[in-house]
Length: 498
Ligand code: FRU
Image (cartoon, rainbow, N blue to C red; front, side, top):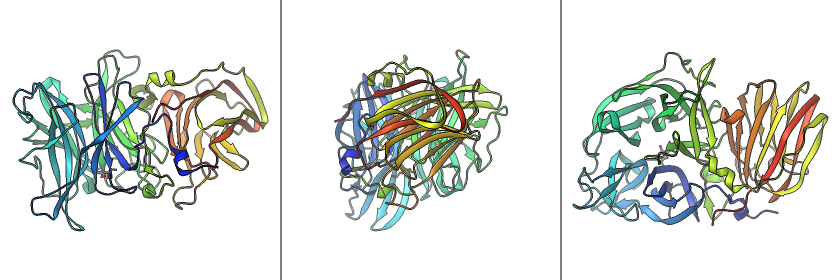
């Protein structure tokens, strides 16, 4: 049976050891993708927040680097600044003058300084740090903070270059007000308030990690709409998740698109991921031109039980990088998410199985396969009441993905170790439309991760699981009638992480 380390993902990012949460400072620069992340360098639970660091040439294979920006103690010897979430940009030509004179391009991190004295939080404001060696070493700006509203709930600056007006834009949350504030700057150190957006969608949880970006519309070349992502918005109470808003941004104000249904809480129409374990996702800055549209990475965990996951010596992982687009539907512009196309290069492809008709029964697709693969299938529910697939199955232990009553569900109640938190066992649910009577599934299983992309990424469900065995069977099934399964493909994926 499994040891804690055998839950380690094989083709998703996880840290060598200790706790991680949000991805931070996602950035492409001179052939390298940078992934910084919330990290506790000293333990396997949240604490001592610092920015960990990894780089990749292809967004799939990551090289671990030393901690980039550590928590620091002030000159009084007792005040501490933890390095909370934020973003990173390239200041081309070092126009800000933050890096030493003569530096070609300056890498600048804009993050939240969370200040404490002992156990007492005294401030939360925005700081900058800079690097003239591609993020390997960092210096704190000596006039920090750069933006202080004298609030203790003001965080997660997300900065990007707004080319039409040649300026930097920052979104940051006023977390407990359920609002995003937008700021502008010419030099990354002096910031001016532009506008607010908020009190929309799910306002039952604190708002965190805003991310604003133009997103291309499928089949409408050259057309984009602005999308604002907010972490806080799970359809189930007491779980964190993400919501999105489609609209316009003119360099000053983000306004909702009147053609898109206005999200109301608890909304199901603007949920980013219907699972429990996708949060704090942000976009890469400065992607190479060959990449169409934004790429986002999210943290695979939930604050409801995050510290209790049964893994050592590490805790936490990142999603596959997701390519983001919009699709025009009768219900407005719909967010579409797909793993980046090159993920396909990881799988050892096998020929699809021929069409299978299944009537009121289960069929084994694989008797025993290591839990590290991509599984694809097109399903026509036909007359069946419930259709689906059972993964990582060993006897009574199984993770079920099924379609019933117009809904796609992921049931992890019997997925293995679910007892470390009573908030963990759960059934997730997303509305799903059939297309010509069919829906498609693309499922990535990676030890303790299940990422489900249905109908080309129109619905996504991401959940963690902790199976008792490192291998399991895969079954397809239909109940209450007969269904057709076509293009059934199991593609093993070998380890690409250390
Ligand atoms: C989101 C978050 C952020 C904060 C960070 C602290 O998961 O709570 O709002 O900056 O984590 O680690």
